[in-house]
Length: 226
Image 1 (cartoon, rainbow, N blue to C red):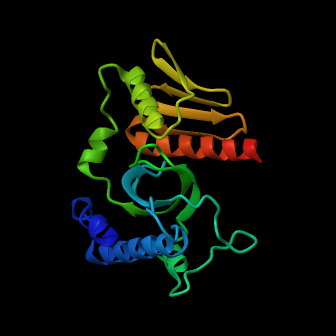
Image 2: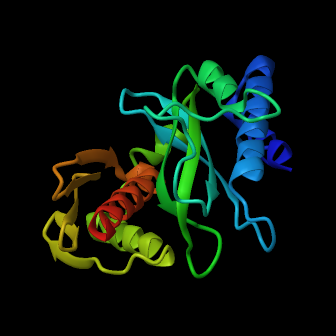
């Protein structure tokens, strides 16, 4: 099901047959890794598959595929080396085909309510920048930054993160909580955490911005609990 869902989205991205085969294999390995190691023995799995397009920060686009599960910890060997599947070498295959562009991070579910805490395991591949994507990156909404911040806040609230307050000034809108700030200015989101971690992405990559904010928020909450 995961393979069919993802490969059905790929023709519009202009990928070659070989690329589609590689993506199909990686999706299969990613989904199997979750099903083998990160779902409960009984009850619903609560696993989710996310697919979206984002910029890589260097003027190119990439396809991102993430598998979410509710097992928070990463089952790896000391030193961070991933544990391979017993019936194959799933994550090693992903590492080779994605040329190291894969990983995992704390996250929250996107498709259910209430949102569940867990982790996302992902890979990313370069793809041609589509005409739609090129257009998206230059579209300014009527309300500009204020509207972008409101949309981002709505995405975060849907995932159970509702501690942000908003502030709007001419040309600048801000989301903030005790230890994390997000500013939208000139069509770009900028964020900084009290830990010192910071980043920026264009408004067109609001899905990825939401993922980064959720990741930071969850990681900081883990530190507070510890």
